[in-house]
Length: 211
Image 1 (tube, one colour):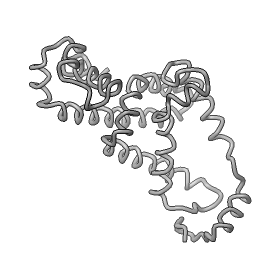
Image 2 (image 1 turned 90 degrees about the horizontal axis):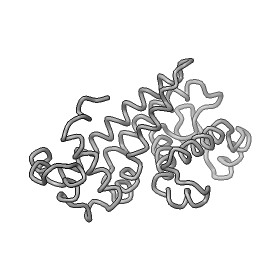
Image 3 (image 1 turned 120 degrees about the vertical axis):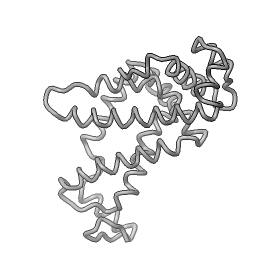
Image 4 (image 1 turned 30 degrees about the vertical axis):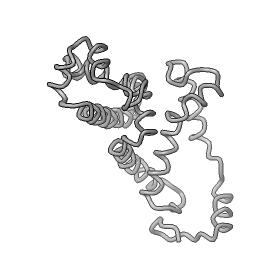
């Protein structure tokens, strides 16, 4: 555990993430956050300066967490390593905050960092592809990140559709099973993809750029 997570500053940050996620940034108050954290409003201002400063700290912490979980996901690929299970559980409390931040448009740094990390994964996968990419790396990373985050944004609809809260342990496991199945079985064959690109008038070059 990060030593910072044992401090009053960390309690304030975690309380803020809950309030921002549950009520939205505009409706959340320093007083309410302080009460949840068990501290005075003055201590919140002492540590973070303002509500905006507190939100920036929440975003910075989430970016740091995403980077660490990404590293752990890479470690998971080694035989016998189950750290990804703990990582998913650790990220679960922050999903409501993430969903709200994405809708309110305040999560640009986090989204950009996730796109950057996605580029690394895609670049690694490209080297093992039997066919050259038909779109540039940045675009594929941005689209893939948006698709991955859409479950958080649409969590209420997804939860209703599958009959379980996607932010609960049961719902998270159900999502993981579904995503593994989807990603391990491509929807389109290479032949169908070629036909679709031809129908759109797209020709591919060896650089992975579409024209």
